[in-house]
Amino acid sequence: MTAQDAEGFGAPALVREALGQARQQRLRFSALVSVQDSQAFWNRLGYRAACDLEQHQQRNLESYGVPAVDMLRALH
Image (cartoon, rainbow, N blue to C red; front, side):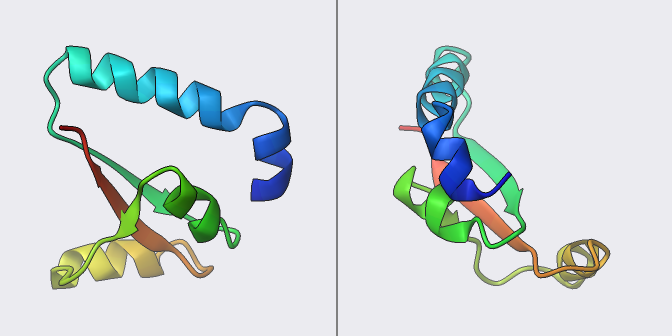
């Protein structure tokens, strides 16, 4: 399934619901790893690529074996 397919299945509404629950639990951030060219999809939902990754974080991304982007969204 592509990111475009996910939008058609209501994924943005599911993400908004999950973010609402995270806010109720007073979480400050949501984080994910974007793969399969889904970065634009997550950008539309307020996520941004994480900058200044530590070396071990970069190695973790490389372990996916495909292009992977660590992404964050503030929950304020």
